[in-house]
Length: 147
Image (tube, rainbow, N blue to C red; front, side, top):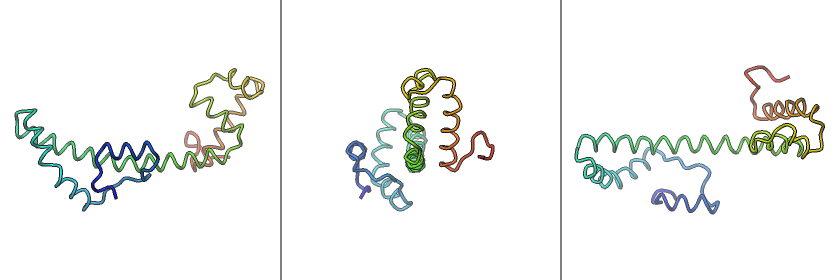
């Protein structure tokens, strides 16, 4: 499906939510992609730089980065899905607390006001929510075992 997509096609699919969560090319697909595009990219690079060797180096770097970006994108998508699953398993108050603290950057006082908690109890409650999220993600905080 993705073999003949352009960059704008992929962006359009991602914007509409139709894109596959994992966009990784196998060796055969990458080779076909390279064969279709390398000559034109190299000609452009040679024209811009005025140096054939520099064009060779830039072409190699460009396709290397393209291949690496695809691999890291699927790792990021996987981490994002894991995070969303873990967040969905938290209690609504824990979710809201963590979101306000770490995504919105709200102060402890602001979080306490929004959630109807006392500022004194918020620190401990936030710690517990963070620890629970770490357990759900299969991680422990600061390398210590979760208790």
